[in-house]
Image 1 (cartoon, rainbow, N blue to C red):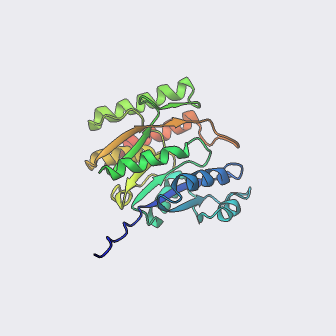
Image 2 (cartoon, rainbow, N blue to C red):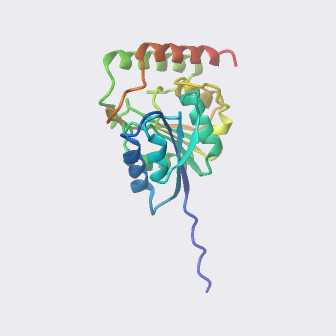
Image 3 (cartoon, rainbow, N blue to C red):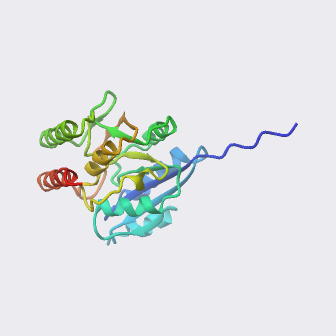
Length: 232
């Protein structure tokens, strides 16, 4: 009797935008490898904004594929999505705020049949070590606006730890070039009636380096992304 054919391992693509993350990127990549190695085939794609601190060299030395984008986080993610070969594509930050062990939960959401699986800091089991009250209130405000306009049921929206089924990222038709990208993903996924799942995620504080978030200016970017969504 012939042996059953060996089941192909799921291919995972992890997209990590970077800018001057030399102090963190090696550990981020090591965490991804630790979780995915053996169980999955995988690729790690770092999209770097021409860092001047050696981020690119460290990422390459750690086994990641490195692409370049000088525009912003949104543009970098789209470039990574377009290059990804995985059955599941995951966006992940480079500052060690995302726990690599949660990769399995994001993958499981796609394996269960959802198109988009989004980490949420506001579900039971989630949380944050890095969310001052002003950011918490701002996030709640923007989530409420999107939920009212589009009939969604999001608990979190401005968080970048997410997974996508094969080719779903391209279907989202993303245009945002900067920090409005997470908002646009949430809105477009709802507008296109994709199957969406939120899972709990815990956000750690940035390990090293300078934070790229600017509460008020980024809040304005998010609001503009919501307004632009009403025109399309």
